[in-house]
Amino acid sequence: MLNFWATWCPPCVDEAPSLNALQHRIAPLGGTVLGISVDEDQSAYEQFLENYAIAFPTARAAGNTQLAKDYGTTMFPETFVIGRDGRFDRKIVGPQDWTSAEMTAYLDTLLRQK
Image (cartoon, rainbow, N blue to C red; front, side, top):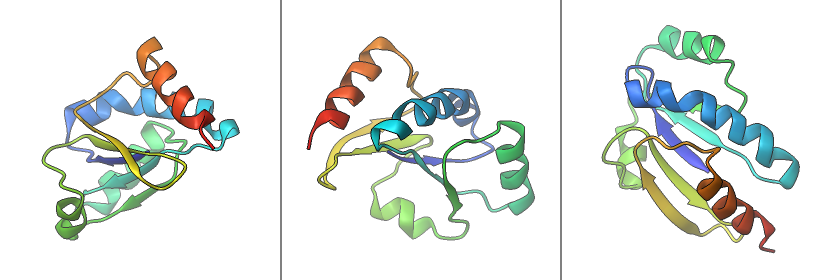
């Protein structure tokens, strides 16, 4: 899972606990969430990670709007679900409840693929 987010994005803030729960659930199954912050403000980024006890790996791509453009990101949060074969399975625009029954079933199916 590749998730583009920002500290100044209210839906991103709302989604953070759900992404943490997802990371805890999928890590033992070989999955991971990778967060890419587009924040310019290093201290806001670091404070966010601390305040929300972010449990998944993150990187800050400040000033690199090209990275988000290369992925076709149009708003935040935006998540790209990548299968075990390295191919994009789905692009999800907007915040999600990553612990919902529907999302859990979808991701479990993807994680079971060889």
